[in-house]
Length: 73
Image (cartoon, rainbow, N blue to C red; front, side, top):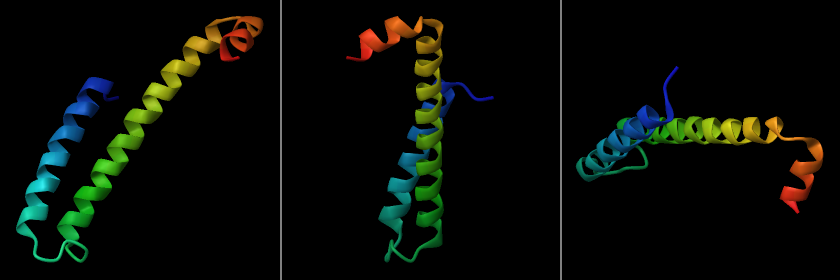
């Protein structure tokens, strides 16, 4: 499974590739390559966000329920 650092590397590479492709394409809304790269960036971003969320939830689960409630408010 990919680590968060590797995912962030892939996201930056994909964003630069997307920026280059947008410059090349005449009509960005209909270009299949641009759409594919946008989907890739979005998918990788969601995956990285999910990893951060689950790490945070795992830390909260280690604490007792009383401590979690007092920390949230």
